[in-house]
Image 1 (cartoon, rainbow, N blue to C red):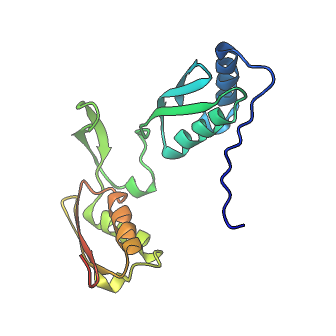
Image 2 (cartoon, rainbow, N blue to C red; image 1 turned 120 degrees about the vertical axis):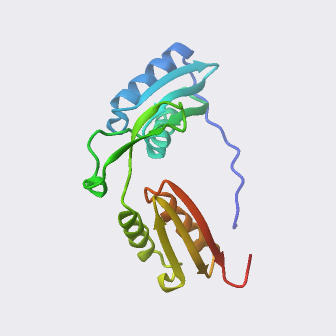
Image 3 (cartoon, rainbow, N blue to C red; image 1 turned 90 degrees about the vertical axis):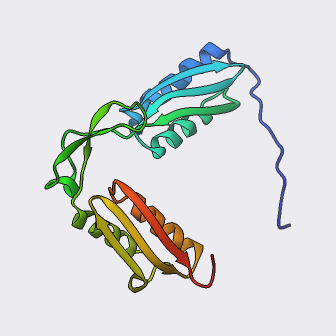
Length: 187
């Protein structure tokens, strides 16, 4: 046997009410220390749990969905959580020497402090991240950062390399990304 289709569903002998399921789910979310700073609202209708509100990372969103799916009585979880990273007044180690400039928030259009990294710092972050990729040969990649705009050119052997380059550049702190990396002998 190399594949099994499992269509079994378990049903408890005693059905819990939606309000009891909601109470259990809220308790499970409160007990989870990984969700301490999350603002999660729960609604349960016909044993279907709807999660809404905000969390600070994709990990927290997945953790909340996991906690909901493990709650007794829940048959389906609909995750409507919005990921909104926290903006700190104290920058992390990459930002210690960087000034802050007001920039409009992409979500609300209001001005919030956004970290501005020096061009050299952004380039170093990209290089450090690509150094560990087994799919990227650094000698074939050129990184130029000018006024916060990161331009990356060159070639990689596989789509995995293309993904690693894109991920490294987009998570570097650059204000704008120009990704011109191509796959060798391909599009």
